[in-house]
Length: 613
Image (cartoon, rainbow, N blue to C red; front, side):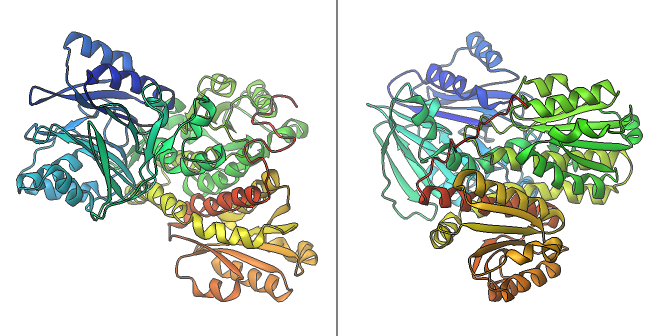
């Protein structure tokens, strides 16, 4: 995940920034850089690869100053390289910026700025931000005013930090949406800025968290927080405990809640380094896949357990409809028992957060014995599932501590979608226009998820109304059928409420007998190709007296008329709806469990990684 560190005070900024970036290394990155204001001049050092490369650059050409910003980057626009690494300077060399997130409308902004005579020195979306700020500073605005005017042009979710030699006594930072946290740390005659708490914990325990659409002007002696529109905001300072576990939770009560809210950043990083929006291409070099081999694949067997298996079910739709390759989804613990038909043109694709799940590893071993191609989608770098595989896709979500998986569910959905595009392209089933459309839709993912997260209060209100239910049935169709399974799993594993997921079309084949006024029926019914059939099933449940909650697309009056409760989600391309519809279900399960006074992060009888059969 991209990392940000900033410093202003009476000490040398460079070592503080570099040490802060080191504390964020575990989140992953492909380049790094820092900028310091030194004698009224901005000095920048950047390099691709590991942070050690940047450290060597700084040793070769030292830079000193009392104010600076640094960044570790996962590439989203432009290859990992020195020229694309952050920080990015404006044309005058007087303004510099670092940024987490995706500027969804960067191509339009780039064309607009180029028409004004701006010359770009990188392939990144971030560079548009610094040029926009320079545009307004050139018209007489202060750094704060220019940043405010520039940020209203940006679509998507962002964390942004900027400084300028015109006002070398301040740093301006802002958060838009949920692309990444912006934390301000308060010291003695010094202030710190970071994307996450660990970067600054050695210096201060007094912190402020920016909320979405808030901006802060930070000086050596303090800060002022306003909305993006300029209204002053009274913020609460938090004192982070010395317990490192509590420190990691930051502003959240539980790791599960934190990890739910980290999904915008996790998904941004999942796209990083793989998506070329300009060319409309996906690149996953770690798969070690050639066009010839892609065309020879006759079947993919996705094997996984629990939440990962539900992700695989969504992936089946992606791979069959986009890449036109037959897919079987196998529960890993059952895979070996049916003597599966596997040959050298079969892919066995394992999905595992930990990469150490015993049943999943056993399924991979069987695939290896039968001569299959082994792939894995895994979160834990260097895990057994990654080492066993011939090729892999890393989720890039960062550590997931809560037992109930959240960000390690949505990340593989995006990974599987990207894999389907790669295979569809290589196998000749996608036209150039179709591929570009599918790739371009990925720009929407972080902001769509961010919109869902911004609606947590509404989900909480429904949770209060339903916290005492004892039985629930989750219904879904088509690409959202697995989301019914996943939503039910989340509820049962942390709230201990009996919950079952069903294909909606199967309701009349038995489960409808359970529907009465005590039964919660939760239907996943976004505007997708199965919408009309879902509405029909919702009406049947309602007619039999069930309490009905519906996940519905904004503005859906039909769903609102039928349902007792509605979880609203933003409109999305139907392929991407599972990434959107699962978010309120995660939040719902979380709040139901907390309202019932349960241990959310360590539910009874469960472990994060099942390493025995």
